Image 1 (cartoon, rainbow, N blue to C red):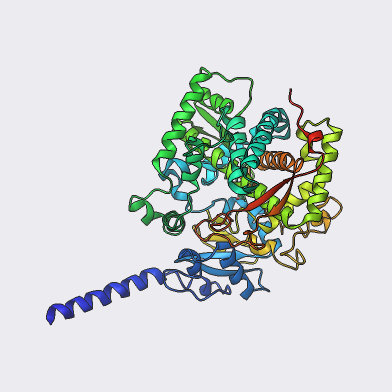
Image 2: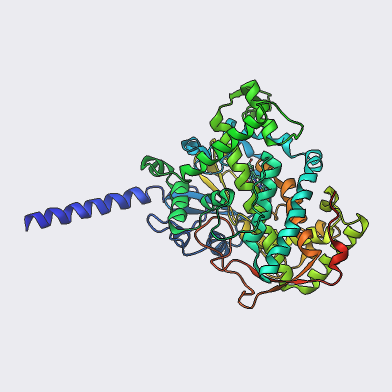
Length: 528
Ligand code: HEM
């Protein structure tokens, strides 16, 4: 009896301590007079997302609906205070003007704990600033134009791949299909390697790049749990010895990088690609850039950073991951919406046909400027299906908003992109596909700071130009020959997967029927 009593007391004490521990920050917003949602112990206001029952974009959208007239409100991301900002003006202030204070993405102090998170996407502060400054020259318009011949040859292989696959089955799963093209593009343009991801898959799929892609973007409850765990409680996550990504990823890309560097004799080539850039870094042994504090003080302060193999490897993995998955998703959502909207599809196809007539069935970098309707379709898709439904930032230095609200280092900022993109005040009839919103003559009507497909401020997507180039090249290659329809089993509204922070369709993928268009023979690519 005594033992039972002791056990009961012990359990009660443990539960009480856990309760105190997991709710100790729950007066953060009350103390600051910020309207907030009442949290649940441990799960805060994100229970459905944390338990992987709901896509994060939807979880936050519901939270936003309750505070429609507020520029921002407080929530608890698990146990951690997060400020959700919905006002375009406040967003501009936080993401751009006061960037120095809010320059982190999430769990910033822990990015060095694994190779795969030690890169420009995850890092913050000086580590982010210097690398970002040194990688930026890779993505100028001139660099993209020079690189386009590589995309063109990938588009030729894609043309053959589509013919082969549609010869096997008229119904194609567009997401994986598009990823084979974008993966090939990024491997060719960034590393100068032939990934062969568009070669026919016979029997078991043994392509190592696809295997790595699946490892990085694995969708499972275990991975979903790790993502959330690391984001909210990074010290416990790493303390328990967890890693977000499997070591096989580091090993594979480590070998790949070494092989490519050796094949170039550690000397820059004429390709001017990612490998050439990092060979330059390696030669100098250090990279130099402005300290992030220059953004606070306005005074230029140069600092240097040692370049080691791990730093280079992690950027390499980031290019691969960021380079293919986001663009493949966007390409497949565009094909999906065009399949649902035959009039828009006809208009996009007619624009593609006219481009090819003008350019004698060759594509060049002008595809990013000379196809305004197709480009508008892509932007409308990015509005409806933003890659990140919720963009995160972390306060890196105690910060006072112009409203007087004081935020401490470590507080999270959530930008509810999915919600903002579906706010009827900014985008009337937000669930309908209306590419016309993004035509050059209508772009001015879009309220500033309400459209964030590539993020905003100094952390804006680094690969934006590359993304546009490969997505449009992929779409042109499909549309010039095929008309799309939804497959019989494909729903008209997608359900998003709750196990990933990316906006991805749940289970079913995107199944489309590819039907040959009349006159396609006259639009075959001319190959050199
Ligand atoms: C349609 C395709 C793409 C979309 C929608 C997209 C979207 C995004 C978004 C929303 C962010 C976060 C920005 C922020 O925090 O403000 C981001 C960051 C980033 N993206 Fe992309 N992206 C795409 C393609 C690419 C490609 C092709 C590359 C590289 C080749 C790339 C490289 C990066 C990098 C390096 C960052 C981190 C930037 C930083 O934190 O400084 N992205 N992207």
